[in-house]
Image 1 (tube, rainbow, N blue to C red):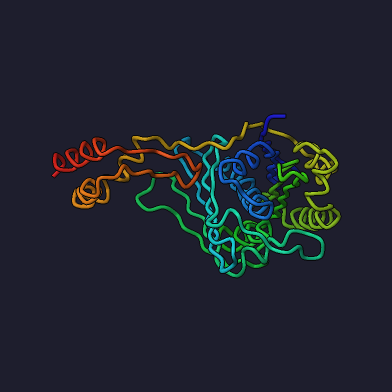
Image 2 (tube, rainbow, N blue to C red):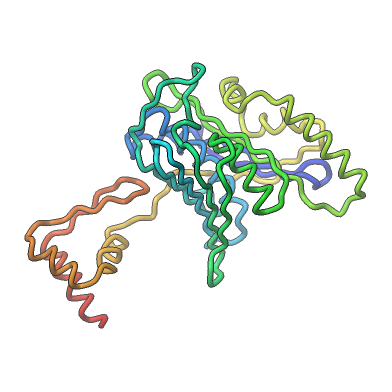
Length: 299
C-alpha cells in the first residue's frame, strides 16, 4: 500500500484532522541511514508528524523543518517536509542501541532532555521559529505541547512505528487532531471540547491501531466517527531528498577558494555525503579545480 495523508474536518468545522500511513517513508529512511530499531522508531515518528505538518503549509514553496536536540545517545534529529507530502530526515547517531524499558523501545531515554524547534520557511525575509522543551521525549507529546504553546492551537498528536523482527518496518502512521477557533457559540464549543477530550482518552495507542491494520480514514473514523467526520482530500507522501551533485558543489564553493585550494594541494579526491539521504557525491581534483575557478570568477 502506498503512503498517504488524509485531511478532514469534524464537528461542523470546529475540528480539523490529519492522519497518515507512512510505512514506506520510514522504511526508506531506515535503509538510507542503516538505522537501529530505536533510531528507526524515533525518526519514523518525527517523519510522520513532519509529513502531516508539511501538508498544513499553504504554498508549494513552503517548507517546515522540525529539529529535536536532546542530551540522549541518539543525538539531534532533523526532519524537513513540504506541502506536497514530501519528507526527509536524519539522526545524528543512527546505530544507537539501548536496553528495553518495560518491554518497549526506550525512545525517551534515547532522546533525553532537550528542545524541539519548528522552523517554517513561508517566503518571508525571516523564517518563523518556535522552540519548546521536550516534555516527555516521546515526540507525539512534544508536538502536542508545541502546538499548544507556540501556535496556541489545542491539539492531540498520535504517532506510531511497528518493527518486524528482522528490523524492517511493519507499519507506521499517526494523526493530528486540532480544535479550530470557530465562530460557533461558546457553549457549543465547550461541548465539542469535552466530547473530543473524552474520545481521545478512549483511543488505544496508535501502535495498536496500526497493528489492527487500520487505514488513516479508519483511525479518524474510530476517534471521530460520531462527530460528523468529513474527509476533504488525500495526499501521497514519500521520503524525498532533492540533493544533487550541483547542490553539493554549491556547498563546497561556500567554504571559499582558499579552502578548496588546500583540498587540491592535498591531492586527494573528496567524498561528500548528504545528511538527509546518505547519498555520496565524489569530486575529483579536476572537479575541485573547476569549483575554485568558479569561486574566483565570482569575486
